[in-house]
Image (cartoon, rainbow, N blue to C red; front, side):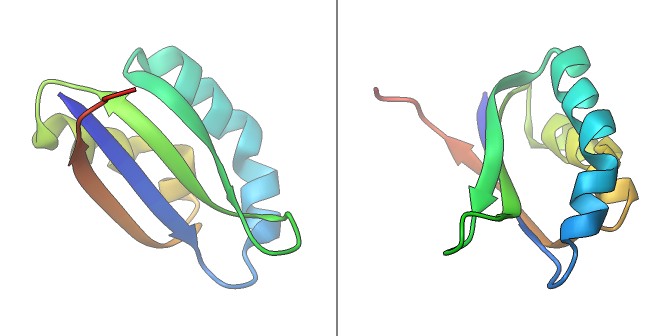
Amino acid sequence: MLIALIARDKPGALQIRLDTRDAHVAYLKESGSVTQAGPLLDGEGQMCGSLVVLDVQDMVEAEAWAANDPYAHAGLFDNVELVAWKKVI
């Protein structure tokens, strides 16, 4: 099951993102559940959120993945949405 994680950073939280980025990227690579990932950008090209496509068994597994993300532990996100997704192209 593919799940899109769409997260928006808290206002003014860029430094939290930068300080936690290495741990987050390691988690992306090591978890074995990520098919695609990258930052969302604001109008100035600064990172302001995340898009991660997970390949997991169910929504419960996606929720657990999101809860264990180092960005979540650091309190980076203002909101996180998990949406079932179907790849077409």
